[in-house]
Every structure is written in C-alpha cells, then in structure tokens.
Image (tube, rainbow, N blue to C red; front, side, top):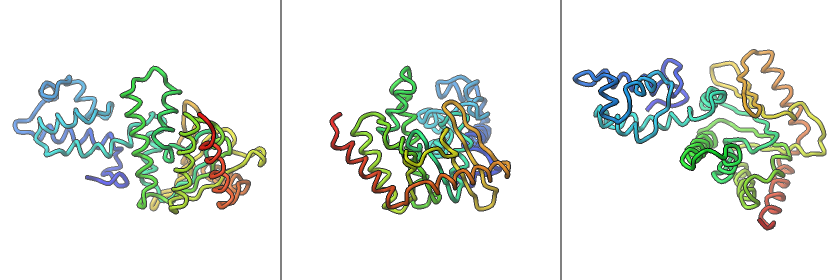
Length: 280
C-alpha cells in the first residue's frame, strides 16, 4: 500500500482510493459497469461514481463488499488506512494530508488540546458538545479518525513536534475532571517519551500575537514550508512565503513568552493532579 507521505501523482488519499476503485472495476473480466457493481454491493451506480470521483468516502463494510465483488484480494479494505486522512472537515483535510508529509510540525493551541494529542474521551466530549444531534455511530467514527491521526503523527516515525499550549487549554474542563486528568497525563507521557516538546504560555504572560486561535507550521524535505490557521468554523492553509514568515515570527514571539520545557511539564503535572483529586 502506498505511504501517505508519497502518494502517486500528488493525489489525496480520497482521490487515490477513487482512482484505484475505477481501475479495479474496469479491469474486472468482463468489464463491470458502475451500475452492476452497485447492484452487487447494495448501493446505487451513482454512488459508485461518487466514490470514483472522490466526492464521497466509503464505509469500511462497503469496501469489503466491493473487494469481494471485484475479487481484489482486499485491496480497498487495506486502503482505508489512507482514507483516515480524509475524514476531516473540508477546510482541514488538505492540512491533514500535509501533516502526513511534514518533517516538523510546530503548533500553538489557544483553547483546546490539539487534535493529534487528544485522548478518545477528550475527543468524544468535544464532538458531543459541538454536535448534539450526531448519532453515536457518527461520533464514534469521528473519534476513531482523530485518534488514528494522532497515532500516525506521534509515532516514532512521525514528524518532529513542538507544541505551545495556552494555559486556558489546561484549565478548561472538557468532559470531566477525570477526562482532563487523563488527557494531561497523556501529554506529559508523550513529552517524557521525547516524542515532542511542549511549552505553556501562562495567563501572566499577558497578550501575545496568537491569542485568537490555532496556528500550525509545517516544514518538508523537498517543498516550501506551510502555515495553517483555524477558527471555529473555517481554516486556511497558507503557502505565500511572506505570510508563512509572518506566522513564524508570531510563533517565535509566543515561544519566547512561554515557560521553559521543564517548568511547562511541572505546571501540566500540577494541573493534572488537581483534576485527579477533584470530585466529578
């Protein structure tokens, strides 16, 4: 299976899945139409077309049925690991795909624990509070995608990571006291395992250039650096050199205002213990 860092022809995971589905369908003997494949897998031919055009992302059980109908030996089922990179809001999916190729990621978070560092319970609490009308199955899928993204980014083969967290990230109770205690302990463990550097900007640091939200900076082996900024309902991937440099300067100013690595871990540990000892 292709590595997410090096997909052919610069395709996104969703586009690669769609092109492979079309190739396998057309290679079937006799050649199979979209309508016929839809009949065999209990969906419409139009839906098969949407998968091939990368408009829709299939559920795993549909990929299994398509594999069986086309006798692929499980090719599409195995491609689902790539599709995890596409199960994000449209405004974030391209940033997620770039994350998979980055050598370094430097991120500031002003309100919530960054997605790649979230525990399942913390992520679930966010999705429950943000969209109370979503079904349990949909929320479970969103949580699984977020945790898979975190697993790939924080793995020993992932990019070098540097996170700056506003103190508000530590103090805002998401889910429950127990959820927060476990979430902060997870961050501490990643730092102690040398998977990332983490710093905290305390309330006493006052105003700084990134108070308004989230900023992520990415560097690559053979491509210019990128910046990604995000608000509540939209995000923007920035590649213009002057704008990226401006984002880097802002990040460096916040890093200068943050506590040292040792003092940051001590503060996170202290807040985690407060949560652990507080009644829910």
